[in-house]
Length: 427
Image (spheres, rainbow, N blue to C red):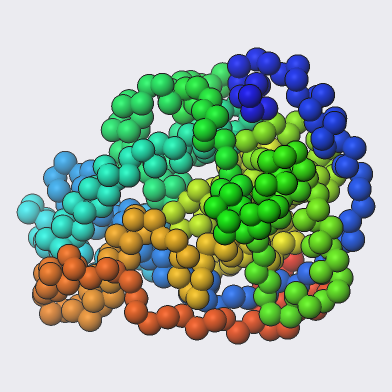
């Protein structure tokens, strides 16, 4: 039985003994401390910049579909700019994409601009709904795993709602998905009265992390995983350092020692681990790695993680983990917010293993780019056959980002950020 499942069902007496024998004796082990310089990755920054607009388009599309009138008036979305993560007013943003949003005057107030979905947008939405239906089991497992990572196996709905797009949940998941799986999910009220989604029952078959699966499939060191299954506790994270890091002796020695530490599954309980130990730091790396692996685009906003910090048992300034392990994570300050990603999720400027939802979103992106070309020439001008047949992928490959040489024991790159920016509690 998994440690977290033991807690979930009340068998917590086995936990201290397990942790004592396998982990606690290693918690005070010393590791070389190295201060690394933050390095900009133009390729990942470009992806984050592009997908910020893509996400805003999808959220506006869902809002129009939810509307009883089938359209949105411009005054109803005027205050959504920050919510959508946009740097321009919402009205101007929607006018950029006439192939998705058809503008027309309000039936009663002609001076009030309104927007409904074009035929192309409706067709893409239909394809997206079909993907949600076909891959529903995958969505259920992903949501279960998120809950299984929480200390109490539940999460406030208000914290989960901003993550819908990142986790690939249907827009109306609380009405269409949750009621269909009463053995998996329960909506309850916490002691403070906040509505929460709780795990119905622990599912041991889901308690396998993405890192473990990668090793098991042989994508990483298969021999290392066999040793891990036999009881040896180390399991290495894949790393892809910015140019100049990997050859530096201090960094290499530090990473070798870090990789030798026991790997603690994010689905195991961690409350018996010293919060100031290197072991806890590797456990935090594992939790963040797993959470980002569960997202469709292998990234999310730092603030979304912060709202789950206590449930995930993360330290207060967990952002330092992203800058401390640049071979695993990338932290971006694009679009006036802080986004975190796992490097292994991308290869040559694209998702390494795109989910079907990511592919349909690429079609939205294709229509968006075409919409800019057709702006001012009328709506629905884009041939629908292109949307149906095009795989949505940009055929021009991103060039590998040119990153500056990093220094050790130096300050962060002041061109784009400072240490205070990276560690700040505000975006």
